[in-house]
Image 1: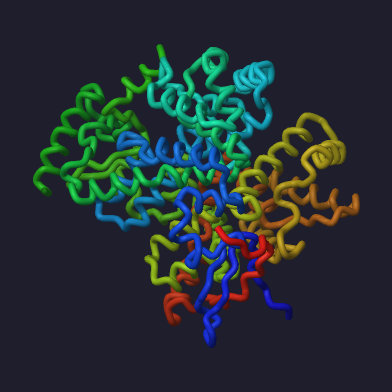
Image 2: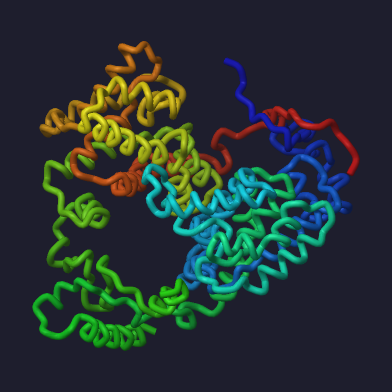
Amino acid sequence: MAEENIRSKIWREVSQEGNPFVAEKCFCAGYDVYGDMLNKASWIEYLYLLIKGEKPSSSHKRILEGLAIALANPGPRDQSVHGAMSAAVGGSTSASCLMSALGIGAGSFNGSREVYDAVLAWHFCANDLNSWCDYFQNEKAEGKAAEDDDVWPSSEHTAGFDPYAEHCALPVKQTLEHLSQIGDVTALLWLSDHRCQLEEMAGMPLALSGVSAAAFIDLGFDEYQSEITYLFLRLPGALAHSLEQRAGGWRQFPFFRDGVVLTNDPKDCVADSPAEEIIGKRSGEQSKELESHE
Amino acid sequence: MSNVDFLYEHEDKLKTNMGAWFAGERVVYRGKDLFPELGDEPWMRVFLYGITGRMLDDKQIKLFEGVWVLCASYPDPRLWNNRIGALAGATRSTGALGLGAAIATSEATLYGLGPGIKCIDFIRKVKLATDGGESIEKFLSAYLKKERSFAGYGRPLVNGDERVEPIAKLATELGYDNGAHYQLAYDVEEWLITSRRRMRMNVFAVIAGLVADQGFSNREFYLYLTACYVGGIIPCYIDAASKPEGCFFPLRCDRIQYEGSENRPW
């Protein structure tokens, strides 16, 4: 039977003399990683090379670098980072912290699926305001009525825009301004010029995921390359905040002790008091109980 | 109400009917006291109650457990999701990390949860069309023309599915073999055979039919499937962990068949 191999355009290895399982030389898209790239290439250049198989142009390098900084830390309020911290404070494995960030940060609300959808929209609409207008109208017409035949739940807002902002956030504008001033960008520049019109059509301000989608378009990334790169670039914040909260421990991390309001507690069925009052009281007791565990 | 008001409304307050832990006292699970009301129940009944909010009877539990045993408990580490468990064992990672990653992997488009939810949706659409008076032949022909395939029909690596017969036997034993969705799954295969198509029914068509007949929605079916591969993954992890470290299908350097650019200086 023919030997089954891994086919790759990315990676080649030359084994050590006498041991075919140890690599003596590693080549990435033809470049000697340890013998040549190590002291010449930047991390961002290497990342681009791994994804695209070619060295980035100067502008592509600057776009990816700027995007990497803009996305690196969504901050501890972000759901994906919250997940990483939640894993860390309980003493879970480091891998579970990042897995939590990835799993949570994959969705269509502020996650990589949103970028996937937004990149598809860019492929469809490009730099054409009329196409975007049709796109937003279709989005509104479809609304939440999308068929439930996919593992992904239906998206509840237009990809790339922020349903909870009333005005475009300054970091979003700053990122767009910086990236659109890098030469050799078309989508970013067009987005910068038409942001206000797009926001009006979407009915909500542009989000960082929308800027990211335009940046990925200018980088020549397809929807899968964009989705997975966005996931990856947001991990440093999960890494840092999980380390910080692991050191701080669960006592210093919100438990939302009095936060759960149970609407169908079987005990309340026989009580006369309004449910929320009872729960408020019980939650208080719970807080004391938790204190006693400390 | 603006969207921001939704955030204010939910700040520090989660209103739920799913349940809560009353520290040191009790647990409420979807409106039931866990210890006195669910303590004696089999895990599958509690699991499905958690998904649907309905308590299934013993016969239904046998069906849902049987599906997991017969359709998803394949301890073969060559299968892509099981392989994650095995690789985690080989690298001496933890069981939970291997299992967690393997479960996530089971949400594939080629197999597992992706085709699963598409399949129950497809069977439900066939039912809707035929209930509405459309002939199954006309519906399937038009659907195939548009979508190019039927979820639940055809299979990677092989065309037939060895799981169909044992599941059909279980369905007959439990008296679920005359359900409308279940029957339609076979009607679709019959149409494929008579119209000389190569696709054959795989087990997802059968179980999607059976589960739809139990009143499960698409999303409930999907959630039921999320943990179904656990029984196959764990033995793969144990096996690889019991062998010398790093010895799960080790690959020589020249097993990378390079097809990229020639050597070049940076």
